Length: 346
Image (cartoon, rainbow, N blue to C red; front, side, top):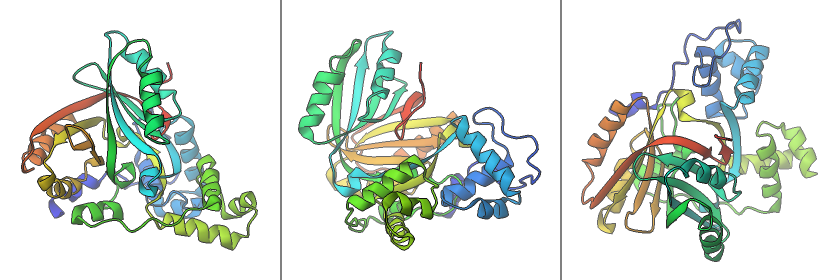
């Protein structure tokens, strides 16, 4: 993967100032110190300010102010959530909603407001709003698609597919690092992920506390759980060592210097599917990959510095796939919701 390593890097993190001067600019306009802070927190979202400060050569108060500024204006956030696909809970579905002309924005806003939706976006091509949602089961999915989404004003048609296998998520997109995550490494090698740990009610309460404040101290976690610090620390370590907990720094790719986001669907025969997954997983630009039901078996998202990079990616990568029966690519025009966070509010 030596030829691909440069693609892992985000905006430069070197040369960070230690005086806190200047500060951050508009969304996406981060300076070297900002990127240095995000690089450390990308690897360890719970890293103490003292550790972050030592890594970037800044004062702890400067680091705290910078992070507070970036979180306050919505450029970055911290995500803590159990991954239902890995725990085999509920049903994850990918929905394409065809809208009447002039109704795309209104429909997308309404869909983004639903608790069940995890991402909502509009891409080039047909007047479609693309939605990822989580339902308790197939009956709940049918009710949501037919009686909720299907009855929205402006919705003309709906196409649904179920996620059969989750391969890569945003947690596996590492713009600051040279090395792939363990989950991506398993996808590249074509080996199954370890069996998920048993998650009990105490674990779920712990994750809920982290959802409210991902950097909450172990002391506060233990107090909130009414357990000893050793128990809280052990539970947290067990979950973070597994792939079932996503505890990460969240930022739109554009904020990190990747403003162009691609979406592709591929029809791949079953006999060629494993090889296609291994090849795609090697690409650092890929930040989401799933196997779905329906006419096309692979759905993926990628992040790029510009459209030329996206064109090179599709031409180079997709051309190497064997047996592909259909290819559909698009560029995201607007993201209304990502990782459960609303991006557009009016």
